[in-house]
Length: 331
Image 1 (spheres, rainbow, N blue to C red):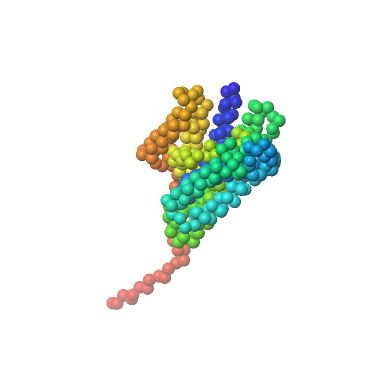
Image 2: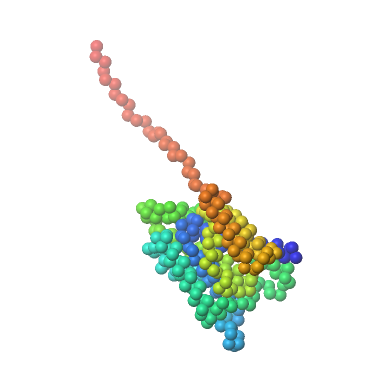
């Protein structure tokens, strides 16, 4: 039993790390206050779900679009692709002329609008019941073997996202992202297009969100509106701030402390009091932790590493200069 719980926590840790890396690329490196990040996670989860299940049954109760019945990994790839396309459309609308504070409010409103739409319109994704019955890889494996298989899949996905984001932020484009985060005017003066830089970061972060959301949907067997309430993005924001904004290792450490330590592990502890008290205790613990870090250590556990350039050394001109003419000495 302990092995099963350990593998479950490991899977959640890998998937939470994927989401933290995607959000850190948008917020930590580029400065995009995307408070609708879990909308992108849900797009990936829903699209993966409708691609992985069969057509809806004719029971008059279950309704959803799609129902392609694709096997793993094609359903997951379909979910990631749909998330990137959705992010490009959303980013093209929201990132073009909006300041960061107005952008955050706009994305919150858009995310809340889609949440209400998916809740009330049962024809899209079956309303509050959601889409269920998504099959994972190797459906014939035993429970323990399946946990090991999915842990391996999740860990490989986390490593891929970590390698891609690390390579991206260490490239000239990554330095342009930091410049856009600090001062868009300075980036424009250097010949960079801030909107293009933001769109790239938004799309790559959305791909990570779709990948994490799709794997979550496959692992738990479906997705519904209860899994992407507005507070979920704020928990990711707290994880990035606690771990260290603008650093991939900091995002992973923050997700391990906040998402894994406070949220996931507490769900497996014995229930104290009523069932409704656990989410409230989680929110209080995250709020106190975030307040403490913002007050005493706003740079996080692992602060962003500033690039150091070697000092410029002026080489002397090897060419001999003109020799000064001596004036004749008068007797």
